[in-house]
Image 1 (cartoon, rainbow, N blue to C red):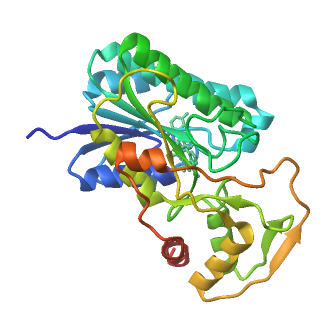
Image 2: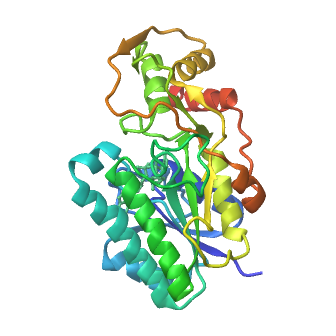
Length: 316
Ligand SMILES: NC(=O)c1ccc[n+]([C@@H]2O[C@H](COP(=O)([O-])OP(=O)(O)OC[C@H]3O[C@@H](n4cnc5c(N)ncnc54)[C@H](O)[C@@H]3O)[C@@H](O)[C@H]2O)c1
């Protein structure tokens, strides 16, 4: 049997590098494309081929033209929601412009290459719907970042209908695990881990009762492999090829902090700060469609996932 080939954009990042590891473990030939805007060289698996390029560049398009990929997992992105607010044009340039550059390159090969796109379940649905958020819910993104992610899905649906592009969109909830950057915006688990290690108090905004759906990075990586092997879903509406990836379990910030202290076997104080304006109170996704349509169920219980994440930070 010929070895299947996958390109992982953003493969030097937290989730992308874990996805690359999973495909290697499954026997695929893996190429990582990254410009190291936030990714780290040690994250790139040694067995992968590295292409250092920007997703907006002709080099990225050439990589797809020449690579004979069966699958392109597209995770490279400007991931900072606050940056998308202060500089929406940059967010559009990277997150929409870069993604369209890759889609056009895949289309131009004339090859049957499946794109798997890292979308978001936390930032596309908005606040008007009752959680858990279902894929077909109305989209009212609250940030330029969320708008760009959904815009890319709309482009993918267009390419599928008009140009027969094969794709799957995975809408991640809050992903956590080893390699997450504590200096990033989204990584509350990583930030708390580092503060516990340093013996510093954990800052909780408002009463800490706001909830999120925390899904372990290994479970998200496994979903990419399943998405790579799924029979093609007929082209139709934008939600038809989208799957939420979460746990459908809400965890409050205070419970998360307690869970991490248990994992660390170490107590630090909780320090309450003023609630952040506009912060969503509840965010949790429905995973029924991923279960039936993708054959995916998250396997990592949060207590064990937090322990593995804390241990990884503590061992660095
Ligand atoms: N972390 C989460 O909870 C979460 C939730 C929903 C969606 N996502 C999406 O998952 C993907 C991976 O996120 P992550 O948390 O691993 O972030 P990350 O910052 O660790 O990874 C992003 C990677 O993309 C690379 N990159 C950025 N701009 C690039 C460009 N112009 N050209 C080439 N490479 C570029 C970075 O260097 C980095 O390696 C992103 O698309 C993100 O939007 C993440």
